[in-house]
Amino acid sequence: MSREREVVEACPTELFIGGKWVAAGKTFAVEDPATGTTLCDVADASPADGKAALDAAVAVQAEWAATPPRERGEILRRTYELMTEQADDLALLMTLEMGKPVAESKGEIAYAADFFRWFAEEAVRIDGGYQIAPNGASRFLVMRQPVGPCLLITPWNFPAAMGARKIGPAVAAGCTMVIKPASQTPLSMLKLAELMTEAGLPAGVLNVVTTQDAGGVMEPLIRDGRARKLSFTGSTQVGRKLLEQASGQVLRTSMELGGNAPLLVFEDADLDKAVGGAMLAKMRNGGEACTAANRIYVQSSVMEPFAAKLTERMAALKVGRGTEAGVDVGPLIDGKQRDKVADLVADAIARGARTLTGGAVAAGNGYFYQPTVLADVPETARLQKEEIFGPVAPLTAFETEDDAVRMANDTEFGLVSYVFTKDLGRALRVSERLEAGMIGLNQGIVSNPAAPFGGVKQSGLGREGGTVGIDEYLEVKYVAVNVD
Image (cartoon, rainbow, N blue to C red; front, side, top):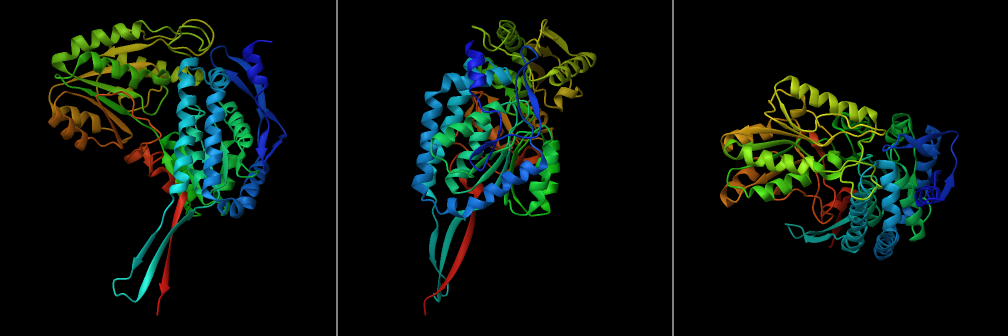
């Protein structure tokens, strides 16, 4: 039996409800995007299964909230250790279901595990306050308590990390959960649930429902009234629908939605560092990331050398199955996404863009697209407004700082922006003017468990990670004390 088959067969494929693995009435296939073949079949939850999962979370909420913070933190710490010990197998499993190269998958496992380590430390730092009333007649006690049962919905592009940065603070705060991973990549979350059980997480605290009917299963739970928190990572379009559904029960919400990240390269930038940063910002996860550099704006005086260096780096990337040695870029998640990327490139070319490298679907099985650099991309091109979610770097020239900021902000999104310049004054001016929740200044990666991740405008609400990440799972209660 190959190692790949061993890893897949060792992964649970049933629903995880109330601490037990439960079969569903039907199943659906999980596909390897590099080959188009089926890896395995997993349980396809019904609305009744979803309700059972919420029942389980509600049943143990009070007991879990009363668990000492140190105990909750130790469970998270043990989960971190288990993930670290089993990183090779977890990475292989992720690569098989999502497609990214194993080296990138190992990086995501380390990143995901760090959320558990970070929030293990935050669990014991949940604080409150004591204050004398201004008139001296009473005292104010301020306490922070778990918000209650949470509904968590995660995307396919980072199947371990996106769950970890929701589960970590929820566990630390004392909240129970129902989580629905994306149907394209459910295996990483099912395996994580198994590891957390091994780490000592009590039955019912984490419940996992895998399903192809996301709306049919999750909408009744959102409208149920017993869940008190909804956290979603995914598209802005879906996020808007979920916010509408959540409004009926006035649920606490945190939304990490779409992005359209600009990357600005000024004429005084170190071009080698700017190209390296652009490669990280554009090609992490093969471009299938909300933080990916979607629009690359380069000052016209340095466009030619920047474009040449970037094209050389992109053209040298090896495309292939993520399990193969030396592969830099894996497949896109499915045929629909590959076709979308191809359509966006075709639209840009039709509007006047030039192809410097790539620009076509890669030959062979699986959902591959060539690493692509486009020059002279007009502002009217669709890929200037829509997330590409693929290995395509569109280049557009600008003349002045004001032009760069205007073009960067000309979007409904505001997740992250990247700026490359040696001028400190310019760096601060531009960072202040950019409409984004995060700025990568002379670097192409902003994600870190110790930092607050999130956007503005149509890119979402709330923050995940950092010292504020746990706040999304805590309510503030004020007690007025009569001291007469």
